[in-house]
Image (cartoon, rainbow, N blue to C red; front, side, top):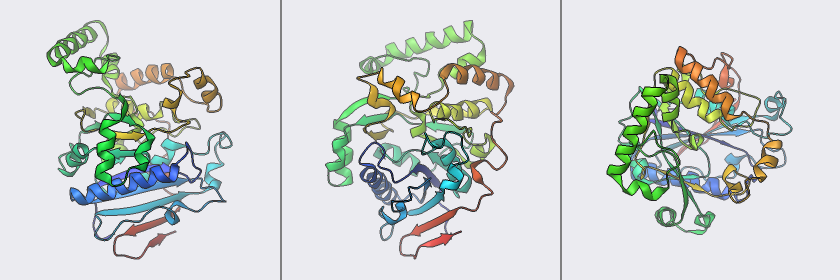
Length: 355
């Protein structure tokens, strides 16, 4: 690779039509990055970790659009075969181990900063413009709000029109508001009263620092809402915290464990302003799809063994108090020593295959 990009973007998927319209959502994601990297002249390495690809389907490298002529994007596929997937006890119930797959991408990222995200997102221009300024602090990790938008966005032609549609068709917003890290569960319209919210945030901070130990205060301030959709930090810090814990479980709360692990090692959280958001294309069979039928979550989780928040939170307090990492991963986490099939696509160049 002749040119090292500033940012590696890591996402994972498989060609199984999860949630419906998977290929269309992924195309939308790729084309958004192609468009914005060119618009803001930001060299990007986009790593797609294809975990446990179905034997009866094409690999995504043969399905998804490649970087267009003159693109700033290096498209990098990493294939994790079924033989690796099957080492997990719950492999028959969970077709993709999302956070472990992202670790595969983190270990192989070539840029100094690594963003872990998902394939059903578009980034606002305000967010991508911030990334392109190349002013990220190596001692911080960055969080962006997620705005859920109607899936009809897939029918809109042109990237700029898609962004305009997204802004006008927000279903809900997830994530804490910059400057209000100690407030949770307040309806959106309250944030219009800026001075009132500042005062409320001040008193909440005062309350926590007065009556609770520092580790409780720190964990309360973390923006864990949909953090699997956007967590950005230097590759050096991803290595320091050993990526995400690699567990034989559904991904719920494992993304939050990444934030806790970073905070425990003194890496500071930076919540980006609300307009620097990602737009999440709504789909079925996702966590948020049970909003109208929360009892359905029980059946959802019955099929997907996962961690409960109490366990993560209590263990996280111990980590922060003792300045520890989770210590759950092996030294070769992310299958760093495994020779996986990799395919690299650059504009105006033939595909490069690495075995």
